[in-house]
Length: 335
Ligand code: AQP
Image 1: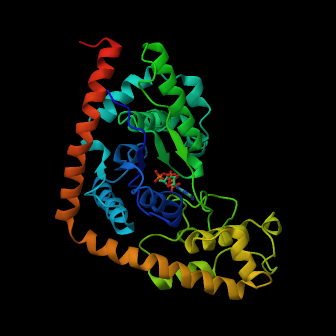
Image 2: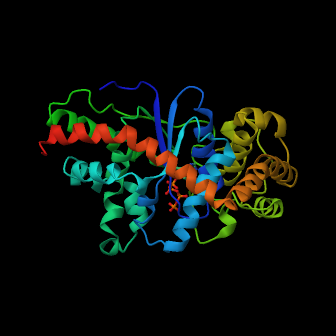
Image 3: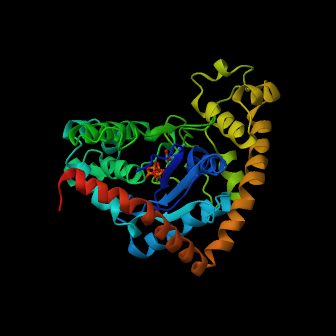
């Protein structure tokens, strides 16, 4: 079986409130890889149900992520866009890898600790095993590269460890590649607008903490105006942002949206008060996000088109995954 050299796999959960962090940390980078890589972009609905999802909302949110991918510039004709639950090989490989990965590895995963919180006993088994399903998602396509935000780095390491152990245990040297994370750009970790020390996230109870991909121009301006900062003007150097989490976050967002480095942004705005910088950031965010938001809305009204994209993508995904899973069954000794 030939090993592809440049195959990208990544996914986003359809859990609603798709935000600027998902866009800058992941989706925008997905777009940029299309000319150099063979890309498989998944709406990971099986990951979403590791915490309770209303079934009707899950369906709508699945279409929303597909619409965001396409509106942001992913071409579903050249590359593969589909939702995970349509391709059974993800679940099948996840079970086998559950028997390869070790409990000690999962016990170290900080995302589970964060998401399960104090009530760990009541978290679903799926939430705990989530990183193994993620390993299966990647390995079932023998993907070589995985563009993700910073928060997913630890899960990627677990995927690499799992691939390596499978290859060793079953005498399958080189069968699963060790996937490389691609953590790209100045916004690999966009922080909450209300608390610059916390990641911007879909589940934050405060809507003011995030800019979503559905926000109107007014919403975006309002949220940036209310973003937490400090009374000092912007510094001249990146070092000057140390200990100023809110300011650092806004400069990082500006840099990512403008396609500049933080140093370049500071060269432009050094000494500026937030009363000057925030409106400039709001204008830039509206300029970059509004065309995507409008296209997303248009696509969301065309349910038949989105469903057809996902169906076709799933058929193409199965064509890659099925021979891999067939070979895995042989390695394991299933007849
Ligand atoms: N704040 C962020 N900054 C940069 N990248 C981010 N990503 C998520 N948040 C940020 C990246 O977006 C991709 C998809 O994430 P996901 O939807 O699969 O899951 P998540 O990381 O759990 O997303 P959230 O928004 O943080 O959801 P909740 O609130 O449920 O925890 C990934 O590549 C991720 O790195």
